[in-house]
Image (cartoon, rainbow, N blue to C red; front, side):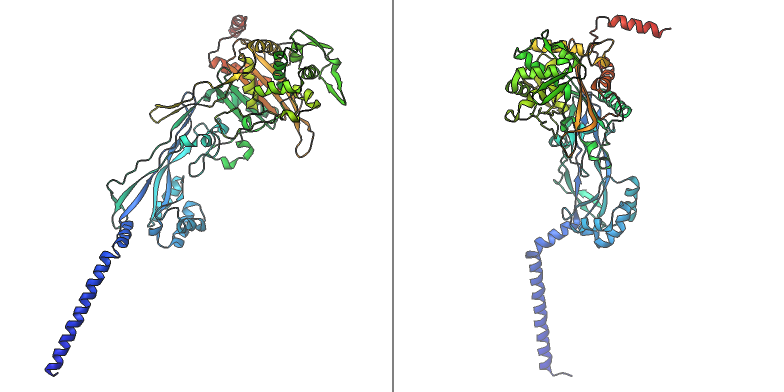
Length: 583
């Protein structure tokens, strides 16, 4: 038995030790409550609360009758909360087969997330992929529906509409040019979770609603676009051509009615197609136009009063020497009136008009038509064309440009300028977007008013040149393949050589067959520019390759637009056809 003094000392030591422990415990509690409290609260909140992203819906692209060309549908997305996933490498090994990704790709997303608590692993899952992810039941992995871009009309107007990236941002066409209007803004809400990380209720005042994108309404009519694409594809295939384009404009206000490229692509899967199929050649591809450029130089000559339609010009029987250069016509002519020079498409006659004009006046008038400048269309990627400054023009240019050489406009520039010839001389900025509306159909922006850029020729000059263009599409002209029963047509044919790649000169046997036209001649409602690149076999002329396409399009589009016939004998033709079909 220990002495009483020793027991007292042991008791005192125990009391002191207990006091020390108590003080230490109190100190620790104070430290936790004061110093560590913010950190622990944040850590606790990370595991008690979860942020849910609420994606908005991208705006739709609608044709002029509000048929959907590009829209959105709900599609599964798999996401991760990296803090809850645990072993990233193990999770990646399990997820990769379900998502048709490599484990390395999945782990990279988990290790370097876009935000600490949320990262998208894959969008637009197939139903089978979504079920496979769900079956894994991994902590920190979830599924949610997000809007996915759809193109209900497939390849229709694909180069105009464009396409989007995997995260829904516009990459080309209207999707890119009008991204600011179409783009949606995601919202969010924060939810309180139970021990199993299941959402129990939303945190008060945490809801931020998503903002949907706006819809854009086009000037393009899907029914007209379908007609144009069908007729273009038919001719390109029949002539085994490399490619082709057709542009339809309303010459009275600059509205684009159709814009077709062939070959085309599916905007739902753009990466499966060659880049050249995705290019809107009407905007991006300048080319030497050949004889379809002659009306613009004719306008300049008449405007300067350097020629009269009935004046006779010596066309040198098909061969004309200028210095070291000899110009030729396809057919041999001696004397032609100025009007006949256009109707017969005489190179020599046009070259002589160029000599009368001189470079300065010719360059000035062609600049007024907009050549060498952007048209200002509301689309992405417009090429300015090739139109050299006046200081680079020489004596060869004086006779080359009137034949459509030594310069290269885009099909769009040609269509806009030709519209000015046939509408009395008014130049309009072309437009594809007619309006911007919200999800309720309320007007947000009105783009329906014509944008007038200037009076480029007098109405009298327009009338004189239109008389010539009307005779081009007659039995005496090169555009007779576009003669129609019910409507008179204004037109100009062209056959240009295709420049060689990687060297000077032209590619042997390669041609661009073209036709510009407007109908009806009395009051044009539609302008068409048709270009078929490198048709195989003969004949390869614009009058035989491109003009029939314009005719086929006009014969379907004009009735669709309820444009009345302007041929005096149209009624008798209809009666005759009706009688014949009855027998």
